[in-house]
Image 1 (tube, rainbow, N blue to C red):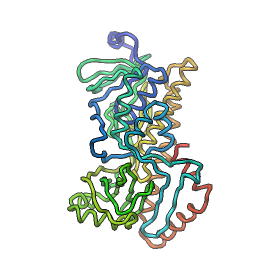
Image 2: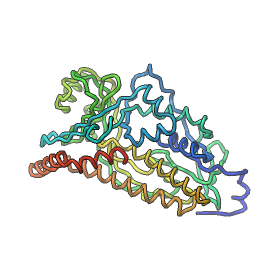
Image 3: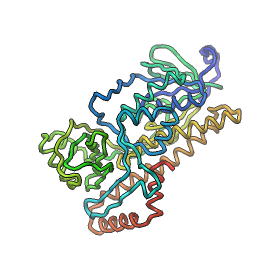
Image 4: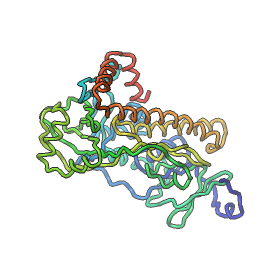
Length: 403
């Protein structure tokens, strides 16, 4: 609710920033950097500075498959070359197959007129390179800092920090994760479902090379992905029911390697070594709206999706592009960048696109959980048809690339 009171006027302390971004993860840091590079006075508020990334440390268990659209944005922001040259793994092929029907679909970058489908990169590396670029871009970093409350006023939004300080901005951007405290403070509800699954992650060594290919096998309990790493290993993302994930995490190394080999159909031969394992819960969550008064959501604060298509971070970076372009258009037209009709444009476009993608991933998860023989046969027929229909297959590849 907008409030213009004597108290609100008294709390104004000089000119407001253009944008305050809360959350310094990959998407939040990219948003702050993109907006600052576009000429907006920007602050980034984060509770904890990310740990420095080093090539000497073990590869982060959390990796992301960056699509061409995401790589283009990071390149535009001046950080992609350092990410690519530090430790990343390009891949030009993706092979997806169904354990039940045997049907498969193969994507080849060359067939799409491209060199690559994307790069597999550590989350921590991307976040660290973005973090290092903030100062040079003029981003005001407030860290450690935490927002305890905010109040929208006529021409700004006032943020109260945990240390008693306050700052003002025209627009507040919440990029503070799937559990977003700011989304809750704004009174924005979410909908979705808990998959009652966990994604088990680890890095593994295999008998045969990964061939610069992202492999994904759909099993009755959930998909298993083997993603190529720069050092020749593969990163696994194995979606399992909660109880089964706990069992797999508790296996000794020999039993884990044997079960993982069977689950992967020994596509890369035997699994001969693995790092420590970890797991994280899976859910579908969509915010009912992406905007409130002088307030927008982006990234996981707006949408959390099933990892089977590896698109979560890519969707968040597309949010960043849309928000930046929306604010630039408003500024060029001499409009208030946080006016309701301006933010509505961003919210409508991104929520529509994110919802289609999220529900599409959810539908795939449901379809691949079918176990009845007639349904499995129908699923297999559908996969084979898609693999043979070049225009549809090309459209799927273009969408994944962010086109």
